[in-house]
Image (cartoon, rainbow, N blue to C red; front, side, top):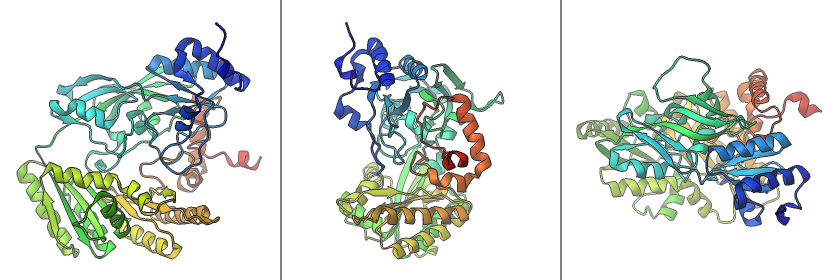
Length: 475
């Protein structure tokens, strides 16, 4: 039977790849326009670009077949999971294939005695924790949304619980990765430490699909705490709230989560998540974990710190319903901000600094926001020095550039305080312009050398993470 007519309009190399893959994978290879549109962008406001075709993988061997074929014919590939990235990671290059791993949803093994498990790349944190709940274990890294573990590894994700449990870097023991030419490589293992060879696991975590495509992940697990309590405290002054968070970390309280929402973000969340019992002023959300006695001790310590910094009451509860309500509102902050400014797109910033510099950074950024005249709610994982602004792009012709100038101003402040342009969202295409200022050209040259060695044809997510070399730009 001849190749499907739908492939005839593709460029010659893509058409060849499409015919080969269709013979092996059937209807899981598609040029359907609505499916291609779904794979043209992530959640963040970055310009969309349709892939030439979409391929649905159902296992590591499928991924290896796709990459072998694309490597042979010089066709670009971008991995796609939950589509929740905000920096353009999953937006394909021209004439690229979008390789969808969202059907790879098996929990392959759970080792309860060793507190680890193995999952496929399309598994989400929510589905894994539902699977583990009756075993008394959970996976803590919580970036919000329906992110998949493949994407969470690729962007080195973290989120609200990172202050206690760390990021994906600290919670991944090993990986299965398909290289650009289709070779399958296993990195790491199940042991908690090893001093053998290069740290290939660490190399692929945060590589954003530019060095290989992650198909399986060996994860650390944690026991579910005996007691969990949630608390909130409101502040008239933004600096008082930040100082409370910083002091909590500096005195060594083993806090589970500590999140800040400024007045603009609280106003949006009150309307969106029906938090009518709160005022639209800066608010800290806390979570405490441990034995009942330990939790009570933690609460008392933080309540005293908040009182010293002019906190307006400290409300806490061990009710699961109340915890769920508060953290759902926190995780809905991005959508609340968009709902507060209908018709506008949002640019999410992701600055991070050492916690001793956090008060200076956030108060400086708040002044920059006011000077810009742009709405830009602030929300952040302030326990580890990381926060986001959601810059609402105005509709005027110069709106995008005004928003980007505010973004650049925020990054410059963070870098001047020994910080980073991205604490957890990654680089993608959205933050490439800051890489030289943060890392320096020598470090970027090392990164480019690694990329060239592992992906000599530049078929893996081209145009992401690494800016072109200066001579290439000049040319």
